[in-house]
Length: 240
Image 1 (cartoon, rainbow, N blue to C red):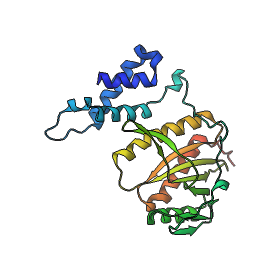
Image 2: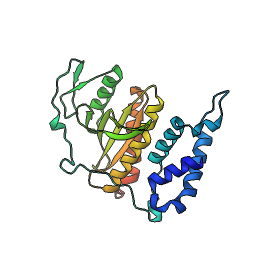
Image 3: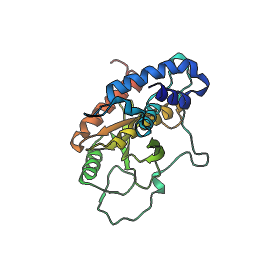
Image 4: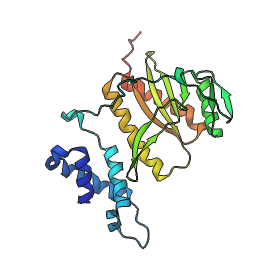
């Protein structure tokens, strides 16, 4: 545990090791106690093996965020210097996969890899709170995450703009996932870290991350996300 906490501290706060290490060690102990499951015949000591320790280090490095309220500097995104903004106007490609026309998307068709994606697009097209959406296909919108010693690109499924009650908008990253692997679980904290950094920056709108385990849950997810965002961001409406 000390070695794992030391690696995390070196990555997150190399200049503040003596002050940060006790906090990181406590988080590491809590994570191992709650999240690590030991199979029969195995020993908890095996977390010292690199295949396990590297996974814990990566997961916690993505999950631990600075304490902004106590004065720590917030996370900020690394922005491409010559292309800070992407656009659906740049999407041009051909596909042999099944495609369906869209109503609220700025891209004419959704190319689906599964029946679930078609159902999600259908629900988004008929939802009046959806200003626009796009399947993240040929958009070059990726979020880096670490898995087994390497950095990989995480490609979320959909990007959605929701209208709030004061006519402001919020951008929602939507991941549609049924069965989830350990590799999939490594993507979520990295995506949450990205959302936090972009929101702290403030120059790219407001963002939120959501997962959908079934397309039939999507209407409820959109409704709950809208209400949550309104509580966070909308100004109070004057009384009649």
